[in-house]
Every structure is written in structure tokens, then in C-alpha cells.
Image (cartoon, rainbow, N blue to C red; front, side, top):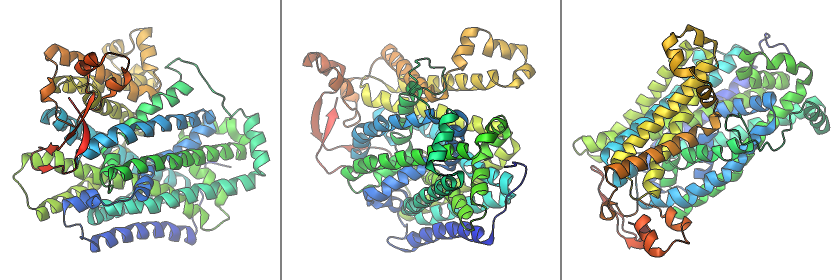
Amino acid sequence: MDPSVQKHFTVVDYVIFALLLVASMAIGLYYALSGGRQRTTQEFLLADRSMSCLPISLSLIASFQSAVAIVGVPAEVFVHGTQYWFIGCAYILGLLIPAHVFIPVLYRLRLSSAYQYLELRFSKTVRICGTLTFIFQMVIYMAVCVYTPALALNAVTGFELWGTVLATGLVCTLYTTIGGLKAVIWTDVFQTVVMFAGQLAVIVVGVQQTGGVSEVWNKVWEGNRISGLNLNPDPTERHTFWTLGVGGVFLMLSLYGVNQAQVQRYLSARTEKEAVRSCYMVFPSLQLALALGCVMGLVMFARYFSLFIRLVHQVYFRPRMVIYFVMDMLQGLPGLPGLFIACLFSGALSTISSAFNSLATVTMEDLIKPHCPPMTEARATMVSKALALSYGLLCLAMAFLSHLMADSVLQVALKILGMVGGPILGVFCLGMFFPWSNSIGAVAGLAAGLVVAFWVGIGSIVTRTSSVSSLSSKCQNVLIATSGLKRFYSLSYMWYSGFSCITVIVIGLIISFLTGPMKEEDVAPGTVFPLLGKLLWFVPERVRKRLCCVTPLGHTVRNTTKGNPFYKSQNCFYYYC
């Protein structure tokens, strides 16, 4: 394989890729012209809370399984071996906790935005801070998801870079804008099937052309690609069981517990049971997606076993490695390269469509409705569609800015995504598990978490690049003055979410105690989960009642968020302070 030689699509490949875009657009048109025709914000943003668990679960996996993961996981296994596969252990707690903690609390409050919870629990200031942090996170991620596969495809095949970016970005923007959340969920279902089919086709053909399963196994074993259980407790070790299996839990919670793109799908379910069931059903899909990515990496290693030393040191080649492999394997099979490219861009479409819809929701519910005069339902729906369209155009603009940056900066953007999710998770945990935490502590904790996360993230980038020499001596003294700080900057990126989350909780609790803990009567019913009450079962009940919410009471809860007043009619059990 010569990386300098470009591969080419056949007419059949172009047709298959075009069919993906046409089918996605058709689903959007169908939901724009059927049912309530997206005339209410309830239908446009929450699918009329009518979705069943199966499409929700497939949409959840599609939102997580981005094009970055489809390209990145096989490349990771090719270069470093199967140690990354242990992140599958984190999926267990990473989905059980949202199913039994976050979903019951958020669903029973009948919210439209996850960040409405922060106002109910703390204050409007905390809600706005959480919303702005989420918007910052998703805008960066959108640009990476739409640009990365287009860049890799252009490098390997010469496929028009900006034609690809514009086609995927505009199609996704249109079907999200006209079809609402129903279109997003059902296109996610279709795109998930395409993703699995594309990866499976590459694996089957790759194994066959490499000489069979036994030949693949012999080569990956000889090349030490099968990693054992690494129990090294050193947090600076890039991948160990602890960084992946424990640090990965925090990453999963930030994605599946409090991220608006996922919470919005839970809230669209017909019942709470359907929402919980969808969280359970996504587990095997995630494990399958992880397995397909890792197996593809092993097959790729076996195929290029003799070229490994040369390829692994070509850093510029790593992001494009999977596309080269696919085109090399499937070049003589018309249609299959197109199927995998459709698989790759399905990952991009599903992720950015989820982002568009969730960003439109939080902007409408958290920033516009609470601060603007009451709007008619028709006007509110039009504003929501305009927001989805605006975020789509912003995505294309951010992709252009990514083009102006170096390739390494794209990797920096992914690291920033991890750094932002942890502090948001920390604020939600602070509110749900610690009833005495107050709004001042929440804001201070969120700020501290973001500062610490960016400090360690940017410090790790600076200390690992040659650009340190170009910095002023003052900046160098601040960032890498001591060996202790160097070790601090060496923290595995898988711990970023956990480290920043714990920072938010610790600082939030300290500030809350210093400024006066929240009183029992001031905590809104239904906003606290009695975690401490369950963990401290051996403590006398009188003490537990003073520490945390231990008494489940039936309450009719009113959501008093300005611009969205409604009552919960069901008499559900809420944990009440």
C-alpha cells in the first residue's frame, strides 16, 4: 500500500453515497408533512413525547457513534492494541446510573431542557451558565464531526472537500429544520443500520483478503496487538483498566446522563419506563459498535503487518488510515467503498443533527422564552426552526475555521469537548446528590471545574509540542516550571471528565458551606436524589434526615420556569428535602 497513491470512487459508489443523503432528506420531508406537521414546539423539539424505546435507543447510539469514532477506534487499535476495548466496562455503570438516577429525576419534572433542572434546583444564573457551557461544547464538536471525515476522504480519494462538507451540512440542516426531533430520531435509526452494515462489510472482506480468521489472529498475536488487563493505578498512564473502566464512567455519565442531546431523547419517550428501557437497550448496541471498531483495527493491522513500522511513524497518515484501508480492501468491489463512506457520513449526520436539535431546544427554552414576552405556539415553533437552521449554518462556518487550523488543532478540539462535559456533570451531581449545596456554590464550582480542566488540557498540549520554545519565558514558567506540574499535565485524557467533575463538587460544597447551606424548605421537591441516604444506610435515621433526603413523598410538582408553566398531574414518588 502506497499512501501517496489516491484511490477513486466508481459511479456506483457515488450513487450509494447520494442515496444516503436522499433517504435522510426524505425522512425529514415525511415528518414535515405528516402528523402535526411540526406546528408546535412540543412536536418539533420533543416529538410530542410519543416515541417508543427502540428508535430512541438506536438514536442514542447514533448520537454517540460519530464519524470521529468510526475513524478513530480502528486507528487506535492499529497503533496501540486492544487496551481501548476495556472502555466497554465503563458502559455498564455509565448506562445503569442514568437509567436509575438521572432519567427518573429529569423525566418526572416534565422538562423540555435539561438545564431547566438547574434553575429549579439552584437559580436562573446557574441555568444560563450551564446552557452557555453546553452550547460552547456542541458548537466545537459539530465542526469536528462534519469536517474530519470530509478531510480524510479528500486526502485519500481526492473527493471534493468543501462539496462534501456543504452537502452533508446542508442536508442535515434541512431535514432537522423541517422534520424536528422525530425526523432526527428516525434518520438516526436508518443511519445506525448503515453504520453497522458498512463496518461489517469492511471486516468480512478484510478478513477474507488477509487469508482468513486464523491468519488475522496469528498476525495480531505476533504483533502484540492483543492487550492484557493493565491494572497500573498511575493516572498518567494513557490507557489502563482504571483510566478506561473508571474514568470512562464519568465520560459516559456526561454523555448519557446530562447531555441535552441524549436527555432530549429520554424526554421524548411515551413513559418513564420507555425512557429507562431505551437506556438498557443501547448497551448491546454500544458494545457491538465498539467491537466492530476494534476488530476492524485488528484486521487492518493484520493486512499491513509488514508495513506497520513505516506506517505507525507517519503521524499525518493516522487520521486517514482507515479510509486508505477501506479503499484498498474494497477497490475492486463496486459499491462497497460507497457503502462504507455512507457509513462514515451517517456517523457525521446523526451526530450533528442531534446537536442542531438540542442546541435549538436549549436556546429556545433557556435563553429566549425566559427573557422574552410570551409568544404564540406558531411563532415559538418558527423561532425554533430558525434556530436549528442558524446552528446548521454556524456548523459550516466552524468547519471552515477548522480548515484554517492545523490538523493537530482538530485533536485539541476533541480534548476540549471532554474537558467541558465533566464540569457540566459536576453541577448536576452537586444538585441531585447534595441537598445543602446552593446556587453560589454551583456557579463557583462550575467555574473552578472549567478553569482546572482547561488548565490541565492546555498544559498537556503545550508540554507535548515543540511550540513551547516559541512561548515567552513567562508563559513557560507558569505552565512547566516544576516537574510536579509536568506530571499534572501528563494526566490521562480519560480522567479529564472525572477530575473536573469532582473539582466542581468539592469546590461547590465548600463555597455552599461558607455562604450558608441551602435550607430544607428551599429545595424544590423532586430535584434531589437520596444518594447519601442509600449509601449511609448504617447511620441512624435521625442523622440521615439531617444530611440528605431520605423520605419519598408523593407530590404534585409544578414547573415554575418562566415562560413554561405547567403542572405534573401524576402523583409520583419524589425524594423530597
